[in-house]
Length: 412
Image (cartoon, rainbow, N blue to C red):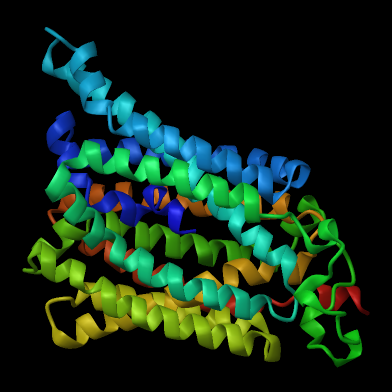
């Protein structure tokens, strides 16, 4: 999960202004390239999900890590490639080439790092744990939340010291030399493949479990897509991806609209991580004792609070709402994303089901920055986009009440 940062939006947020200047792209043009690359990667992910079911987590993680490293080396060269291709060309040609080059880079890094590597990590945890799945995801979430929140500041320092090209090369070398060997040596697709059982012990009598944690039927992808719960959770996850990607991608510009310097607005990610970690740990403890739809409800209400806070970022209570709301939403997101699919639909077709979900998440993450960028360009403010970002999770919060585990119907 940590090595997916180069493909996550917070891994790109500090490169945004530099890429606009170096490639000669406007904010909307860069956002559009991000949108095209991200949507194309999202549309590829269902195929990657089916491939996961065939290959398993170990091979997919190694493959995704190798591709991520190679793409980082490519991204470090896009400026030089643009200069070489457009020697003596007009400004319009230069912009078009820059758009195509960075769009391809966005597609590949979003597919390999944010898409396949993230999906592989979550699926492996989902397949290895049952009663302790929430605990495992929460412990993982502690590291992931702080690392994701600290990433913009760390990358900003790396860029200021070495330049953006060398920063990407360093990330590529670390990915190749550290993550790929770890994936090959440590990852295994399931405990059954190692003559073990989930949770490292014989499962308890199913009659003693939370009814929501008993698997009565292994859902295929098509069966899962026909359930209301799949769409309630997937669209909620997609909103968080849409909103968090948008405000992270444009974080410096958003901060400027509310009178924040770059360092001040980036510093809000740290307390947000603290809230996210606390919520993730709580969800990891409580998930086996409750129904996941109540955690989903809390996540969507957090989304409402975070968007309202961003609308009022120039007020002290607005900053509190922004930090707490997005921390709540992010913490529940990290925990639920690994919990819901194996609990609701079983483990057999987990790759295919999660592949569709990840496709929606990735596509939404591409739409967010473009939507916010267009709002800024045509209205002069992010206000219209933020109002929309308040309304959508409010609707999804209502849908949360009906997002029951489909395994309950199978037990009748």
